[in-house]
Image 1 (cartoon, helix red, strand yellow):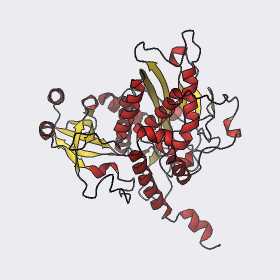
Image 2: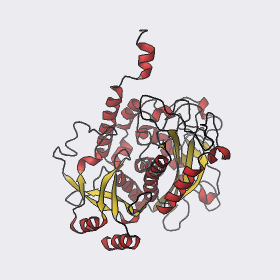
Image 3: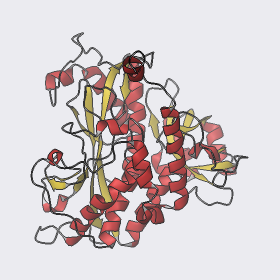
Length: 449
């Protein structure tokens, strides 16, 4: 591994290396090293980081009462770069590379609560059954004017015309052209970083864009989504605006999702196990959907991890409020796109753009896996508008966390330790949020109640 990375760095004249560690929230943490020091650290195992990197909250704090998982003396972890993730980092004056790292204890054991390790655990379960999952994410995001005071609402930025969008422009080509320079630079930087993005469209929101990733290996795609977010935010700053992957950044605009298309192949034959030889859907396909329908509502925080995530899930906003499934039905939580039998798949529409891609993909795949293994039977496919049906998804993060911790089928496979630390982190963030008095309360309660 060291030799391969060393050759890669030398061939490209890389001077610095960003060692990236995705935390529980999908925030990129880590270290930046001179290339020479980075290569030396691979030989003497001196590339290290405090173990607490995996329990930090989105506010920068730490949950209480988790010393039994990460002792209070906070021992160092050894970082081991994944050589398949190294790529040129665009936008730096000094030739720089990204590489994503996994954490290991001094004993050589992998850090089991790390998001990449959670996804690896899920993929190993599929492998043991002779199955190979394939996924294709779709990530939505907004461009917004710079917001230097968090007390003020976000607003769409002006485009090339000098005017800001005020109405829905779904799939609008003229609207897309308003941000042509930003979009072209995103494509250029993604190409340099070898991210396999496909089409980009203008979504329904004002200055809301969506990118589709080419389908492939779940781990590789999760890595790409992680780096894509970084690149998009940097490009936006180059053009004097912000890019945000918040699930619901503006009250009067639709939310941003990370839809996950997923299918499963037979590892030996390469055939889609969701389709029979004559093109019909299989029992495994229906069981996969059944697992999603039954279990995803219980592990919703893995795809809707923030207070803001639940503001997205409202009727008639292209975001689900329940977990019905249907054929080419975008009102459902799970949509079966029209496709040839070899491409038969299900689209999980629950995940927000703010979700950690490793955990969102792991959650979606593990629910489908349990359904397949336990031969679950799905409810009847819905025809019609799912928004006319009762809401079955939790309305708040607090309610969602209560259900999450009790989901034994998923907890048994992903690990009680992971569930405990994830719950503790989200509970700490929820407490911090509930400690803030909002402008709505001051406006409507201050002089009236």
